[in-house]
Amino acid sequence: MEIIQLNEHTWSFEEGTVRFFLLEGMERALLIDSGMMTKNAKDLAEKITKLPVSLLNTHADIDHIGSNSQFEEFYMNPSECPNYFHHGGSGRVIPVWDGDTIDLGGRPLKIIAMPGHTPGSIAVFDIDSWMIFSGDPIQDGRIFMFGDQREMHAYIMSLERLWDMSDEFEKIYPSHGSLDISKEIIPKLIDAAKDILAGKAEGKPEKVFGNREVVLYDFGFAGFLCDK
Image: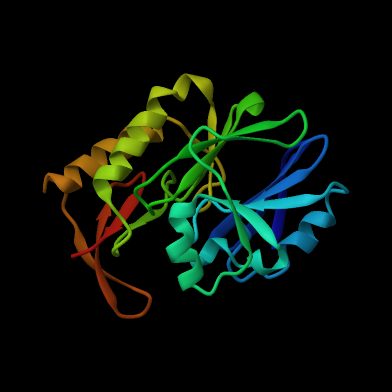
């Protein structure tokens, strides 16, 4: 586990190909996701900050909820509940909705709905720091868009909406791929997703999780793993 300090009050926890974050305000701190194999994210956070630590999940895929059992309650969009509890998740969900604000004490965080990768995916907009913590939908790695809960039309609409507010933020910090990426990747992802839907993109067979067959659309700047 490598811990990288992004600024005076923000840290990234690098767990191989998975990443989660710690944000500190004046009154409390917030973990954005809790890792995959990591089971002690709260303990790691408490070694950094003396403030009480809360948890928010960008969505409920298993690589984001590894340490959730350390928390009696956590923030999450309720649309993720089927996914979360199907994976054996526990604890009380504090619902967060599009446009809600979580204030850590002088550090307001705005919730942005990002359905598509999963129904309840959210991004966290760190307003005063001009930072977006995007979860999985925006990254320069391989974006999972296969399986029943993924929906490309919703994904495109989510990115288009975020691009409409792109003058309000500078850097994007995703859960996979490079630690920070330019917001200019957003229109590229939109165009790529549209090409996939229109049948204009060329894909190749790929196996994930051992033997599940999907199609990889590799655009160079990022890739999409989709159903056959």
